[in-house]
Image 1 (cartoon, rainbow, N blue to C red):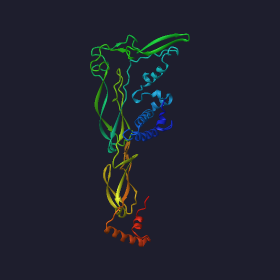
Image 2: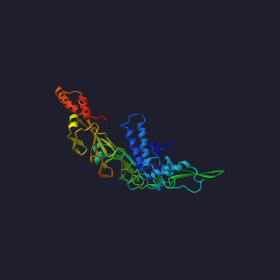
Image 3: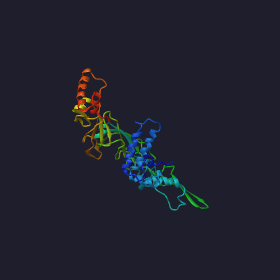
Image 4: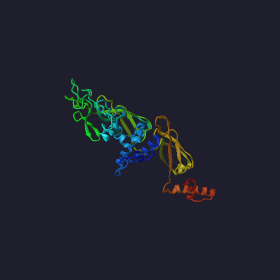
Length: 376
């Protein structure tokens, strides 16, 4: 059964790019295999990524909207541009194979032209601060590279592939069947050249006639400040090598952010907690707090209530694409009220409570502390 990618992401068919991105990030966090260990979560995660790959690219989305899943089958790593009549045209050839002659006109096309290489995907984990500030990251990838010995031809140096005699270089063989209703032509891939239109008689020893070799290499990529879970980076030309002098595909790096013990993220804002004593809350104080930029001094006003949120401006996450603009660091104040007091501490507090009680009419230690801390 064909999948509805809009339903997979939980968005309407007229959703804009931002809605689609927001839905993807929310679901990617929920179903990522490192986070969700439930049965079926990994498969669900793959479906979510596939849906986003299709709907996030305007051209691919338009093709999907018009023709459905079959038109984009193979994803970022599989379909070819309509310009070279690959990929999508193959869908209709497989559906209508055998009816070309009866439908009028010829569907002959050469398969021996350049073919773009496949795109590749890499998932990359970043620490919290790496996602905030970005920077260079070294990755290791394995992809197909054009064989340097034969320059991608697949033939031994000094030799050249010859035109296939079975299909005369078209890559296809045709069989005409006459029926009472007319003539029908069945078109299939040439079994001799496997659709390439060329035959290699002396294969290159370095690549065994494939024209490309699997190579593992290191790359340094630039991580922009402010990336989040699900951010996708495109590294041009680092996918698999193309065939028959076709251009290479691209490498897509999907980023996933490790949780931090102290900081949490809400959009471009950073959240953290700060625990202070009840005396610091009553009297006020200045404290050094941790931020992603390093220690900062924070003023705690006298009489600070539990769960008060204090803001450090421009100490949050840089806005992706505009690192000059940053969010804020929101600090929630938690007040540590001790379970036990020393005799001296209790005596002093009771004296203060009596004084406050005389002024407010609410005597006792409980009434005194209650005046300062209105639990929310």
